Image (cartoon, rainbow, N blue to C red; front, side):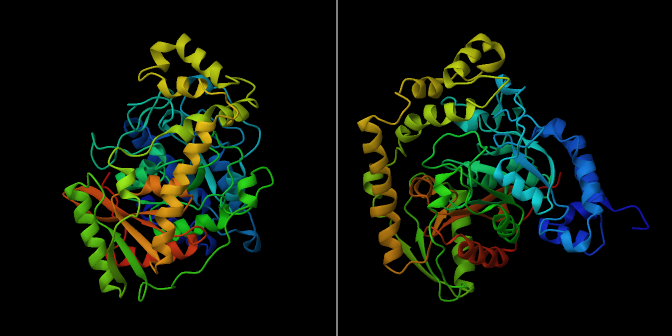
Length: 469
């Protein structure tokens, strides 16, 4: 380029437009990376969304600029943040814990390796609710002992969502072009919703979890948080696929077809969720109006097991029983830090002034299990979850001819998480300066169709609005 880049213009691109501009020679990866690094330097001291900045980011971008056109991937030059429970070679993976500050993996998680191979620039690691919000009850979303309290860029005091809080804040505040989060139950769609951006929780087994600090092998997945649905589709294309070290990806659901357009798509609207706020109701109404304008067939439905689920929400039994086993497997490879859940608990006790602002009740609960999944109660709980969410929940609705379900806010995300079905947090126009949105859920293996339909709905709603920061 013959003139200095307009950094504001760079930050205005979503990932799809940004990589196209770089591949076409209208912009360089270095300029894009510099724009985001400068913005992180300016805004992160108040937002606390980035826990570690990659000192190699500018060098990596320069290397990408030297690649010939035929070797440039689909994410060429896109600056990204990675949630800090996912391994990035040479950067600490802390899960937000001060005890893990010196744990520096030597290898990228497969998700990160695939992003790099596609040309993404890793700007750094995103803050998160500590241990992916499975440390204690009552911990503030977005808080970690190592990264501090993440702040919502729309307005201080608003919930950031959890646990991929830094990923959601980073995308909304334009600290990155896109980000990767992880979800066990709501941890992608919640921060996306609270920050007014797009979040996809993929079908279970579609994206590998190797190199990710775990909670539950039954429910964990990584997924994209972006500023457009097409960006989420772009990232999913890159990170999906089997991994020999993650058995779930070897048994991933076969990709199924849904209608290619909203015209003729049957959308079941869940209106009778408990505790729906006026803002969530407004967002639901806006989405229904947009669906009808696009030609979708909209019908009110009730989730079949709603009465049995009650209003108290889901029990955490399955996660408690799986956490010790799965976390110990990851920590066994840590060379400078705790190597077991018990060591984490003891380390937190020893550093209580900094490590235990909110306690560690869930860590103690998980440590109190046998740690091998042999308890009969665990197997009954897992069978109950699948029965209520999938077998007698989603599946009868989808079998009845409903292609997609629409929930207010992110109601329904625990259902999709338990069932292993894909869910998409889609923002609606902000109300009184506060982001809002809805959740779309489709059958397992229909992720790309879900994104296609979600993109059309997003267009009808006017796209994503970002906060003025």
